[in-house]
Image (cartoon, rainbow, N blue to C red; front, side, top):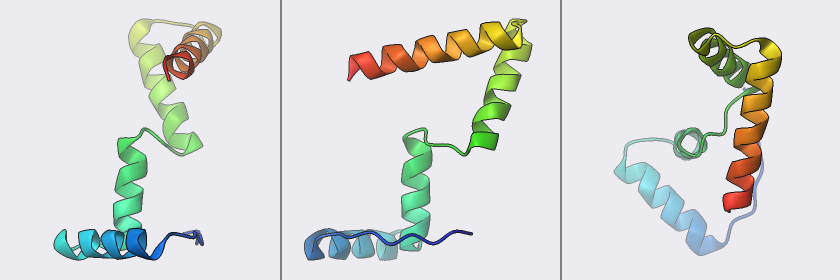
Length: 79
C-alpha cells in the first residue's frame, strides 16, 4: 500500500479525526471511501468496469472507448 502526505488546516484535521473515531474507522479508510464515492478508481478497476460494460452492450473496444471518452467530456462540461 502506498503512503501519502497531505497538508490540512488544523480544524480540518480535527474534524477528519473526529469523523473517523465516530465511525470506528481510520482516517485512511475514510479517505479511501470518499475517493470511491466520487468515482476515483484504480486503472485496473476502471478497465474492468469498461470491459463489463462493453461486453453487456456488445460494443467493440474502440466503440466502448469512444463512448467512455464522450461521457467524461460531458461530465467535465457539466461542472
